[in-house]
Length: 259
Ligand code: CAA
Image (cartoon, protein in one colour):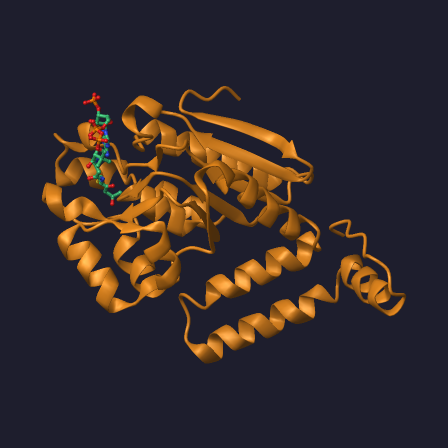
């Protein structure tokens, strides 16, 4: 499929696909078409048995500076209701394979929300995270008030959402929003390194484990524990479980086939 606003490589590295947001002049502002392309690309990579981990990135200047303000400016509430533009975010969240956001430069508004919808975030030292919607007379609408609060806690989330203040990569690291911070020239390599670790594991247990961690966000403890237990038992239906445990006993490296 030909995309206008994203670049997709399904074999960037063995078992690792990459999606680059590609509207550099607009700091990768997320217009509707870009989001639809992103949704389509993720659905297609999710179906591709060769892909075990997906990286979403932008460029050094910007991961994404938010939803496209120029496209939204003249919209009414009813227009937004009809377009239901944040439905695409729900689809991203449904991706079964792990997604790593490799963030450099601005990750603002919808850009910060997109990064938080991913499973892990690797940031360059120059990354800036923020929910500045309040400065343009609106508020976060693609999960910012919920995911940011769960990630960094009420005090910092409230301050970021109510004042639009940006935080640096280092602050984001301290607050628990990102996994790693590295020099600007290394952030993509670092994301690949992390992706490689994930691709060494059984794709089946990775899928079940990701699903179980995400369950912690929208269930009570008891329900989450039952869900985790069911997925744990499910791992034992895979050949990868036998291979992983046999390899441990035989003191060799396992070879996971995703079966
Ligand atoms: N939408 C549309 N265009 C955008 C944009 C956005 N979110 N962010 C940047 N751009 C455009 C600018 O209009 C500019 O275009 P022109 O050259 O045609 O004027 C170009 O990208 C470069 O931007 P700047 O000249 O502003 O660059 P800067 O370095 O001076 O500032 C910035 C960078 C601080 C990120 C600034 O661009 C900015 O504040 N952007 C908006 C950030 C924002 O408010 N994001 C939230 C959007 S709403 C949202 O995301 C809702 C939601 O919950 C999903």
